[in-house]
Structures are given as structure tokens and as C-alpha cells.
Image (cartoon, rainbow, N blue to C red; front, side, top):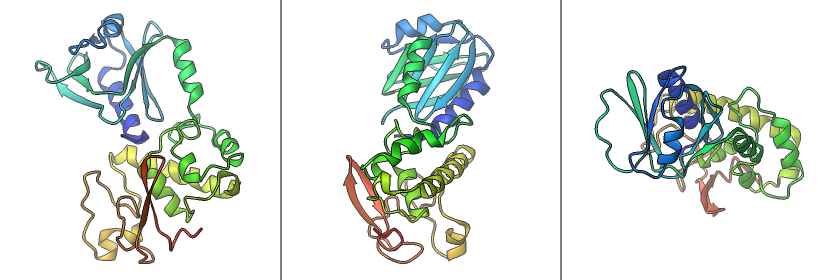
Length: 269
């Protein structure tokens, strides 16, 4: 599932391609035909991301809410747009480019009240200037749940996924089983600040790189990591491989239906 930095990049691309101008909207697949008809010909006034949710604002105050889920993909291309291929849920067409949305978990039209209710359910997003880390900390400091689970709870922090969860805990030397209420404000602040840095870099580059300069392939004389998600990481999907810092084999187990990775040497219980 795409993590929050990907959705922020999508929002920026929608603003660049369609912002401030009328767009054509259609649903070649048919599953969003009524919603597309309501925004067809309207002006896209803004595109915002909150966590893993994309909100496309139109000039009649309605919003198209998209959550990509596991299989969703957005593809931009020039005009003339080709005939739709596959299950295109939503096609937007502007003056020079088009964008096709395929396979999202959610694609729905929301009134302002519905959008407000959605945002109320989400925790603060480290990539947003209006994010309140204290709001997340109030949830964390009262919880017996492990920090590894809390970081994947989008009602606590919106945006991080499995990669950022594993990597920020490694970088901060926090064992994933530490309960939220045992974390302490200083360590929570360090985790939050690190997420902001790492995810902002993801927005800038379009990939997740979490290793510090002294642990890059060039600095260590090691081959670059080969993985379909891209990026240099410390523990994510490196189970059994030696830690880049201490050499201890990276551990893994399933938590909440997702594979969790950590270094028993650098992240002591």
C-alpha cells in the first residue's frame, strides 16, 4: 500500500496539471459514473493529502475522496488520451494532460460535512504544516498498545506505513514492543521529528531512503540494495541479513497482519 509521501506527491501533481481550470471527468469502468458526472466540467480548486487519503476539491465545495488501498494506481499522460485500458474508475482530462485512476480502495464524492468527518477520524499527518504532534502523543501516552502497532494506526498518525514504521523505530533505537505509555514525550518527539524528515525526503525524491550518510553503499563499500520498493533501508525486508550498524541479524515477525522488522542489537527491549 502506498505510504503518505506518495499521496502528497499525487496531490501536488493534480494541482500542477489540473489546478485552477475546468476538468472533464468520466468513469469508463462505470463504478463512479454518478460522481464523475457531478464534477464534470467543474474547476479543480485544490488537491490535498491527509495521510493516505487524497482529496480533490472542486468549485462547488464537493470533494472527490480517493484512497488507493493495496491495488490503486494513478497514471498521468499527455493528450490525446488513449482509449481506456482496464478498469479505469476515474479519468480526469485537462487542457494538456489526463489522469487515470485504477483499482482504488475508495473513490467517492463527499460533501463538506463528509470530508470533515473523514478528517476527524484521522490522526495528524507529519507532512502537513497544520499537524499537531501533541494530539498524537495524547493517544500514545495513554495506550498499553505497542508503539509498532500505534504507528500503523491511521487514527493516531496519518501517513506512515510498514516501511516508515520499521525504519523510524530503528533509527531511534526503540524496540517495537515498547508500550505507548512507556515511550515518554522525548522519545515520541524524536520519532515524530524523524518521520517528518524522512517522509519529506520521500516527497522530494519519490522513494524511501532512510540510511544515514555513513551507511550508504558508497560509504560502506557495499552493493546497493535491490528491492522492488526501491530505496536504501536499515531493516525493512532485510530479515536475516546483518544489521548495517551492529551486524546482528535482522529479526522479523507478523504483527497486526503485517511483517515487522527490527534489529535485536540496536533496538533492545
